[in-house]
Image (cartoon, rainbow, N blue to C red; front, top):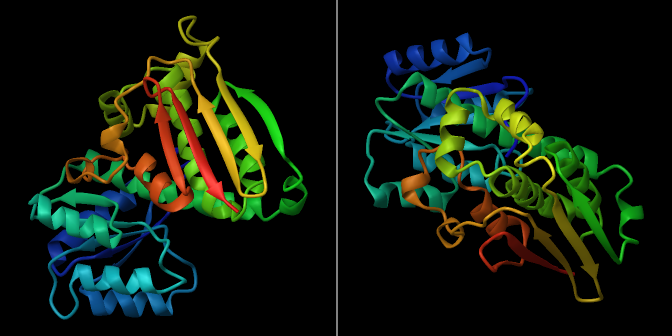
Length: 300
């Protein structure tokens, strides 16, 4: 997702006072507002008493009274908290433990001991995801009904701003637009940054860690090698389903590993968008050709 434009509010849960102090210091220095809790039970009390809302929760896995997995389960069962992104911090890097957390809904992971740059990149990604989701939901609720008259159309765009505008238009024309919007935004942004602008997975990781992702996107949009590339999108709606086809002018990519959450990518600040789109936004997602064309379906 698009990186956040300003820092947000973070709940830090850890039973080690030193860890709480270090995490709070790093995040406060970066401009985040932080609230701390010493274990899962205290965290749950903080959440229930809070009236402002958190943009992400940095959650230790191993704690007394109520551990991180128990807190995560309660969060996902609560309608007010279920969409807050959870960053699970753990000293256990075993794949089976990471997979358990991913399956339970912890889509971000932080390994102890952590590097400050990685901490800030992961928190930025989680807060950015939450901010984007909240903003899309607010904007989609405005004038949504009129867009349902759209039956078919062809669209072309080049920039991330245009991708956002098209996300709002097309998701409003779908059943359950809030559900569709996040996944559609992810695929349209991917078509620009990874497709037309050829920013590789490893390059994006480094750019996010150094805070240079947006700058690099803008630079490549002006580069003669990429500036004339466009993304073509078709929209078709009938009585049974909506189909949206997205095609960029890039070289394509190996898309199959990204359809599922992978433990080895859980510690990166990105790389979960396609699998989240597949699970949360669409009834089917089908990559075609060399991976620069994707067809999604939403049943009515």
